[in-house]
Image (cartoon, rainbow, N blue to C red; front, side, top):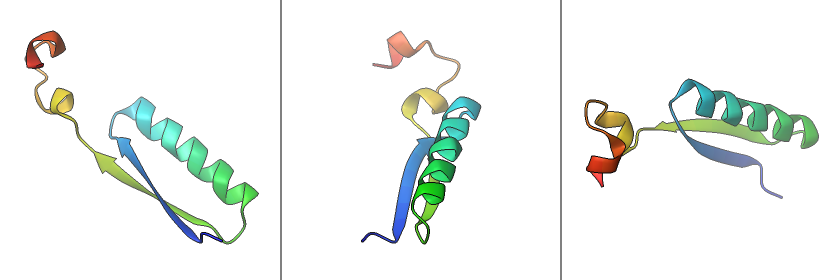
Length: 56
């Protein structure tokens, strides 16, 4: 059985909350499973001054 899992997530407050929620649920349901979060930034996160429709 899998003993480690990495969840990649955007670093926005909502995405982090959702990832933490799933992390806690998985760890509660599967004792011994270690879940870690990997924060990521998208192009849309980096170019906040440009509308997403123009980024492409």
